[in-house]
Length: 123
Image 1 (tube, rainbow, N blue to C red):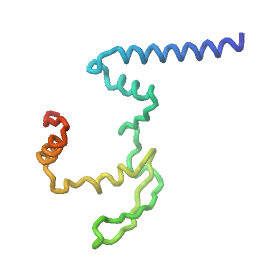
Image 2: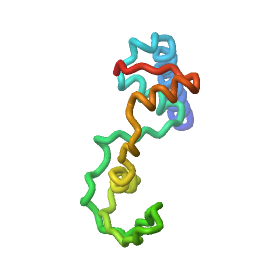
Image 3: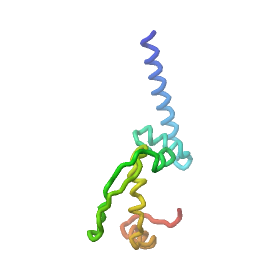
Image 4: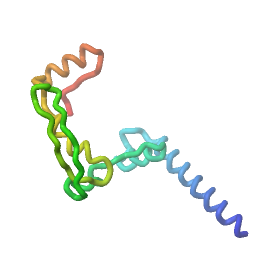
């Protein structure tokens, strides 16, 4: 009896998980909620990091990094940022790469269309 209980519990969990996945798979995509979409991805091994689950910058011990600019006429700089849960670098470095490089949305859409990608300004 002691051996049978864990086996039955495991089988029940696997069956429940399979039933939940099947119901998500059978539902049309446009009817899925965001939570169902996240569950579908996670059930297939995708690690989803949500912004709400990140600790804010400045909540951990500091670490140092070096900024090496692409422009060789500029000097390298030692900088510091606070550690956070998960990868802190996207939060710290994101603003460094957020420039528009002088390219307009219209130019980007034209380039995408030229490459055969479907484009739309509806968002």
